[in-house]
Image (cartoon, rainbow, N blue to C red; front, top):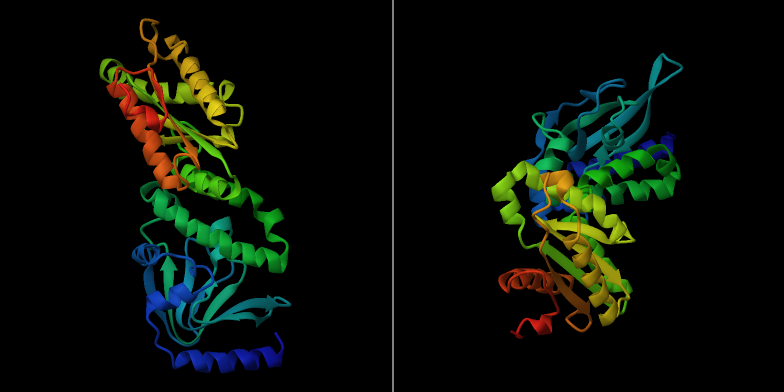
Amino acid sequence: MSAMILLANNIIYKYYSYMNADINKLLRSSKMFSDFHPADIAIMKSLSEEYDYADGETVFQAGDSSSQFFIILEGVIAIRSLENKTHQVDIARYLAGDCVGELDFFTKEPRSASAVAIGATKLLAFPHTNSSLSDIIQKLPQASAHLIHGFLAHFSSRIRKANTFVKSNSLLVRELKKQVYVDKLTGLLNRINFEESLKSILDKNAVVGLLMYKVDNFKRINDEYGHEIGDKMLQYIAENLSSAVPDTELLFRYAGNENAVILPEASRNTLWDSGMQIGNFLRKLDLTPVLGETNIALSISVGLTLSPDHGNEAKNLIESAHALTLEGRRRGGNLTLFPEDSDKL
């Protein structure tokens, strides 16, 4: 690092040392957390812990495990590396609002350099020592999606600058997306992905069809065969749906035994035909591999909504289609309905 850069950093450090900003405001001003909702900031804080370091105290050393990363609340952190295996030199300095050690944390690699406090320094460490990223994703999937969106946006800015992150960490990015966006039971894309994808597709397409279906007699299967068999049935249905849904990237598990399919640029007739095709396919599905008998067939009710005919907001389209699957079951099951059918007997 040049003397000019070090001098500039020291000047900035003196400026920041006089500041005593609120932690929430500081986190929102950070590049990683600038798009976070206040509720996400609160979750981030609740999953973290604060540490105080004196001037010259080591935060971590090269070769240490990387179970946490740090957000600087006050002070400065110098990143140091050995030069010629004998002398440590500063290779970077980070100020309040910056993150330190996040790349090692996500790649699960040992620390590649050392971090030392310059002046009295306060850090926020994520996650706290009694937790892990996997634990948090399992317990708080929706909040984790927002957190990881922020992490990926932060990494993207570094990608544009360094132009090396994608090659070396593409497996990491895919694994993070898998943990957040894939339903663990069925392997289908999950509700978070569904809601985000529908919003994005609505923004890009003038006409969008939404199809949601529910197994009318799933409670009977659970009651007669047990919840373990019920889970196997959900997995079996998901495995077989690929033959009825050509683009499985537009097939999602919404909740329980209810799935959804997005059909960009679908006409009313195309949406109706797709609903009938999926319903009939599942009604004829051989259940013996799961139940060991053939005296039960699936009863399927399908709800259909179309943008802009039935609205332009993802939330409203989803609520309407979901309500139609319940209405179909209430009327005896095995029905395919548009919103305008709900008032017809």
